[in-house]
Length: 396
Ligand code: NAD
Ligand code: USQ
Image (cartoon, rainbow, N blue to C red; front, side, top):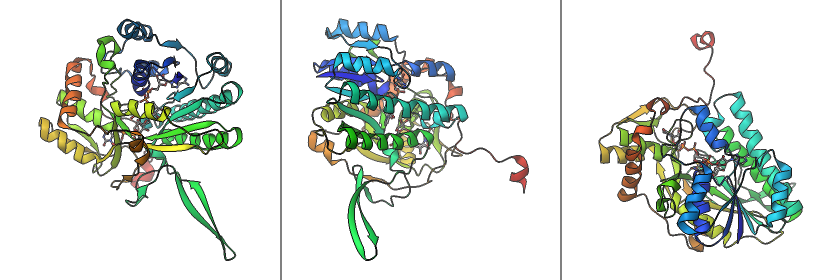
């Protein structure tokens, strides 16, 4: 297949680009490299020394002799360039990772809130609009989030894959309708993903676009078979309080002996998936998909659920690093159950990579190898969900 990967220089996108190229697909990466500039803004680079995009691509060419093309485009802003690329390449499929993906970053300030909405919603809107004009038959695979369903209100009931049946009642009459699962986002970032869902539903209905939305859990790990082939192909490893996700953060903290930063009671239950399964799921999603005119296909892309404090305790027992329960900077349910249906990807052939001692060790080893690149002052999350009350009100 001829595949365009939007956001292909990022954590999930780079690993996916290499994986699809290794499978023999013709891959083009589109990225505006904003994530590298955000490293500079935050003063916290990837723990692993990621190479400039040109060097990454050259290393891949030398390793596999299957070149990957790179086109620098801001998907949210450079509409003509995007439409022109789709018209020229006539892709069979487009994988869309090109969004600001960190919840704490999206809550940092009014600028960060507006940037996240502008970037994410405009990127998705521009892409769908350009597909109608230039690539109406391409299959769009978007990386969405489990966070659109929300946490705390599901009462331990199984979350289905995107849709629920609802009954409308009026004047003694009843009608059964299928609706998108009611959204309940927990951050500005997660909210942008709920807005993406409406754009997808509209363009699938009105223009017959073929869309798969993968509601992904928290990705952990760093290496895949392909990123391991050469040190210059190393994947990103975010550990800072804005971009680092919880399990990779704990593993990195364990590697440098920093107390494990559990927010609140650590009773938050979340869905997880290893980066190797992420790339496999995208391969499986690309190999199937809706026909033109069908509703958006929504798949839950996760393999297991864990409670945050259980993860911390597991890692603490393995490594001896203590757990620190901190004030929760987020506004979220302190404790929740989470049960998720993920049948479709399993039926398509996903064999889940479970959290295991060996894999945990692997990540700790990557973190230990690059520990000197860690800036401990960047570990604790400084972003707050709710503005502190002025002292005068707090005192009343
Ligand atoms: P990332 O920040 O590492 O990568 C995103 C990439 O998109 C970056 O290279 C960035 O430069 C690029 N980008 C952002 N805005 C762009 C724009 N306007 N134009 C062109 N390029 C742009 O993030 P990631 O962890 O790889 O996540 C990728 C996608 O997967 C996101 O949409 C995210 O919501 C989703 N996701 C990630 C996780 C996770 O745990 N990492 C979990 C669930 C879903
Ligand atoms: N947490 C801690 N300590 C930390 C960091 C986080 O206790 O040091 C807690 C948070 O309070 C939260 C949970 O761990 O309850 C998960 O936080 P996270 O930062 O790992 O995940 P989240 O903010 O939800 O975002 C990540 C990705 C995002 C993706 C989402 C999938 O950054 O792109 O969409 O996971 S999901 O969580 O399923 O919605």
